[in-house]
Image (cartoon, rainbow, N blue to C red; front, side, top):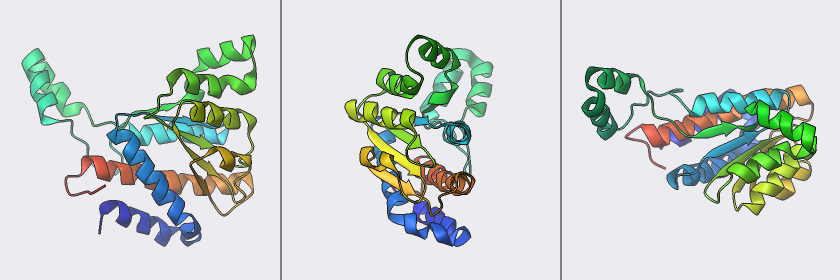
Length: 218
């Protein structure tokens, strides 16, 4: 069994009620694989607790999570060639990364745009500025109706990006703008957020296994 499939099965063993999301989680995983294989970045947006989830996801993607990630042998050799012992030490400390950006962290841009323009367009502006067709937006909204998230999805579609939604049971308006919408089986904000964490943990682990374990297959 593929490692990614084993991780997904592990998720359902721990959270059986999430089995209703199986098809969408797997579809999201495949689209994220394609994003990274094409050299794309993942942009992530959310409000409040979902903003914190955006940062959390970046933390899992940009460094070792469940599996150790060494950098490529040729990169290690290049660092030693350029910087000797210091380069060798650095090569031993650097870890493989899956590029991701949490849009809520850009405080200078966010506050400037809020002051000069419209507060609900900030994420859309960031997506417009960063986004390329090979990139993916992960849009997080517990209701699926957060206007600034909807506008970010629109901007992502304009840029030709994949849009993955992470939301609650109904999907809300966001579903109309997403290529895949993972609807966890809860409606109350705190309960939706409690399900979002194991879902994105599984996705991050599945991606890590795919790109950093030799015996993993995408």
